Length: 110
Length: 318
Image 1 (cartoon, one colour):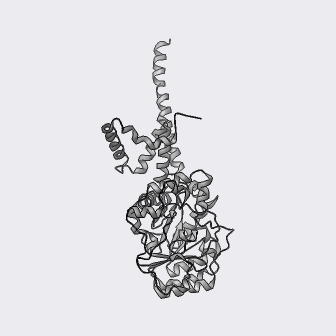
Image 2 (cartoon, chains in turn yellow, purple):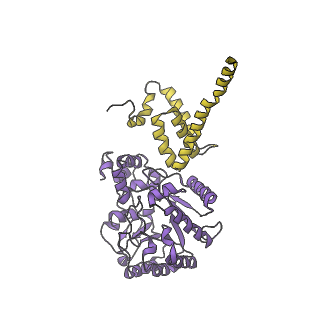
Image 3 (tube, helix red, strand yellow):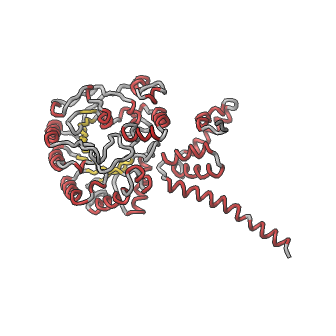
C-alpha cells in the first residue's frame, strides 16, 4: 500500500537543496554544527532530538534519532525516560492551562 | 563477494584498490590463540557461533606447539580467546606455558565462566601471573546485555566484576588490568570509544560500585550468529550498507590483522579471528603453527574479504 511516508525518503533529504541550494546549505551547516559535541555531548543531544522528534511526531526523525541514540551509547531505558520527559512537559502544558480555565470559570460563575 | 555488498557494486578489495591501498602485513608482534568454540553462553553477536553445543577445544599437543611458537618469536602480546577459554580443561597449562614468553598475556572472558570453584582457581592463576583480563560486557544495563547474552547474565556478570575488583583487578592504579569489550546489542554501530568508556565507568560505579581500566568498542561483524540475526530480522542490507558507507580508508593502516597472527584450536593459522571464522587461511593455504619457522615478512598480502568492512567503519576497530 502506498503511503506518504517512505523510510527510504530520509536518504533523499539533501535533495531539498536542489532548488534553493544556498538556504539548504546554511540549514545543513547549522544542523551539523548543532549536533556536534559542545557543552552537551553528542549522546545527550541525540536524546533531546529523539524526545523532540516524538513531540513533533516526525517519523523520519524518530527513525534517525532512535538509531543515533543507540549508536551514541544510549539504551532503551534512557531513551524511554527521555520520552517521558517530553510527555510530562506536553501533558503539563495542557494541564497548566487549566489555571486559565479556572480563572475564566471563576470570573463567570456566581 | 557478499551478495548484499555486491549490490553496492564494490567488494572490500575493490574499495581498497580505488583508494590506492593494499591489505598487507607489517611486523608481526601479536599472537591470538583461539582455544575453541565451547562456551556456556550463545551470544547473538558471536561471529564464531560459539556455544554450549560446540565441542571444539584445543588439546595439549597443540598447546605445546603454541608455547614453542611463543618461545621462538617472543610476541609483544599473546591473547587467549574462544569460545570461553575457561571451559578448556588444559587452559592452565597453556597460560603457565606462554606467560613467561610475553610481556603481555591477555585472556578474554565472558565473565560468567569465571564463576564457581573452577573460576576461583583460574583467578588465582591469573593474579599470580598478572594476566590481563578482557571481559565482554555489551552495555552498562541489564536489558541490552541480556538481549545479546541471555537471561540472567547481567547479575552474574556484575557479581564476577565485583569479585575481580575484590581481588584487585580493575582498581585505579592497580597493575591487575581489567578491560571491558562492548559490542552493540543489535544492528547498529558502537559509540565512540572514549565517550562510551566514560559512560560505562560512571554507570557501573554509580549503580554497582564496579570499576575497570579501559573499554574497547567493536562493531559487530556480519558473520556467524550475528549474520543469521541480520538475515532473520531484515537488517542485513541496511547493516552492510552502513558498513559500506562508513568505510574510512585511514583506518586500514591500524588494522590488527596487519600485526597479528591467529591460531585456531587445531593449530591452523589465520590473519585474524574473523578470517578464522570464515576459514580464510593465513597465506591462502592451510598452515600450522608447528610449521611456522619464521614470522611472515612485512608486505605479505592479507586476504581482503567483505566482512573486513566491519573493521574499517568510522574511526575503525582493531
